[in-house]
Amino acid sequence: MDAQLAELARVAEGGQECPRIKVIAGGVLYRGTPSPSSTMFELVDVAATQEFDANKRVWLRKPDATEVEAEKERYLGAFRLALTPEAETPTALTLAPCELFPLAGGDGLELVAVRVPLDAVSGWWILDGNRIAARGGWFVGATLPVGQP
Image (cartoon, rainbow, N blue to C red; front, side, top):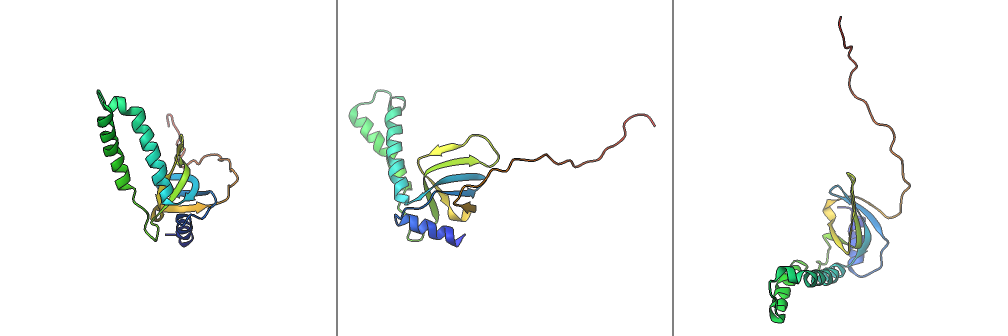
């Protein structure tokens, strides 16, 4: 684990404002702002509530107010149970907001927050870089004559 990244996670967890960073972990480029884990918990709670409210008619056949509230508490309870405050020494970096891009190419994903395990990070940086255009490919093989001898 990179000591400077771990210190950045600790500083962010303390609520100090941090610069937007780029992190590579597990074949994904993450681009976001280091934030306290509590920020993710608050944002996920709000987003999960909105998701539940938007979909409650699909999930519940003929909902009455009591049934809706009970189901919402069960639904949100799973999020709240999983999202407990970070230990004194962070094991993950919370990025909020965050964009994810697969290194293999394809569409990215915009999230309100994400947590990246510190021991999964293979590289990180702060400043933007300059694009380097891809150059021609490689050829490995042999040329064999075809035809009659």
